[in-house]
Length: 405
Ligand SMILES: Cc1cc2nc3c(=O)[nH]c(=O)nc-3n(C[C@H](O)[C@H](O)[C@H](O)COP(=O)(O)OP(=O)(O)OC[C@H]3O[C@@H](n4cnc5c(N)ncnc54)[C@H](O)[C@@H]3O)c2cc1C
Image: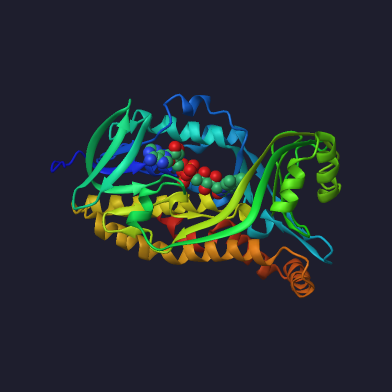
């Protein structure tokens, strides 16, 4: 056990959340060590085709952080979202114009975002990155001792606070945080790239089919991300289809809105589960990102919510540290109080969409039909939906605080 403190904060996990957190605190006096099992090259060579949708709020936050400029070249702006349900009369278009904002979201290649977040902290004097290092155990006290394995050797490091940004799978978390709320949607998300004969679209489509939820989101030129969350039976069936059968299958689900499908690439499947800790802080330890909440991807909320979490917690760390009083237990407890309401609302909203809205139940379908019609004809309701999807309701103050600095 070490009694001397090496760092102020240790982060377990240098994925999107860990790196975003570090970017908010780069070039400050807070000493941070961030661990990841991945090697340093990972951030340059990572060649996953996955894209992620960032909300307008996230874009503003990342711009203020100073990392948006170059990323803009790789982004596709979404100006409208067309929402409909199969066999249900009524659909609606949610548009950026209604909210007087530039865009409803930005689709960006995950690899570009990860790379930029990593490059901009790499040379920061207050941040040390431990690559190829797996955190194996944690002993929590006023000083936290963290054991990690690097080059097959066990080493120990200590800190005043520890934040898990380790995604949803790390077992150590379960010993420190309870109870975890879990829900297995018994669905897979099928994700692939679709090329069609329609170019440079600014409209995304969200369609509730009989068995699932289909999102088709424009990328650059004639490329689209297709994400289809559906039950095991249908996803199993889709996974067995040949390429030409796949084209017909998805064309039938989408209709002609995105043009004629020319090709389908990089089909992958993810099991869908909700993992969520109601209490995401415990004295001088805290959960951030997917470690705290892993949501159904229906509304593209998980990382967008984490960006706002990171902004709030780092803002509080800076405030306390400027007063010379860095008591992490107080900071984390205040952070949880400030964020609990928004986190729970987004979790509930996303869970409601993913469980209630799909299926063939006639009563449900009638309700949805009315809801879609109501959104379409009632501007206030439409704006409320946009605000929910963009996180604007909850984040106005966060952003204005950031701008006033
Ligand atoms: C199909 C799909 C589509 C999505 N679309 C969207 C979207 O459009 N918008 C949106 O906001 N979100 C979306 N999400 C969610 C988003 O991708 C995640 O919220 C985000 O990637 C989570 O980042 P993270 O850093 O919290 O976790 P992770 O990305 O899981 O990173 C955790 C890191 O911790 C490291 N690690 C774990 N354990 C250890 C250990 N013991 N020691 C050292 N390192 C460790 C791992 O190597 C990893 O690098 C989507 C998710 C899916 C599956």
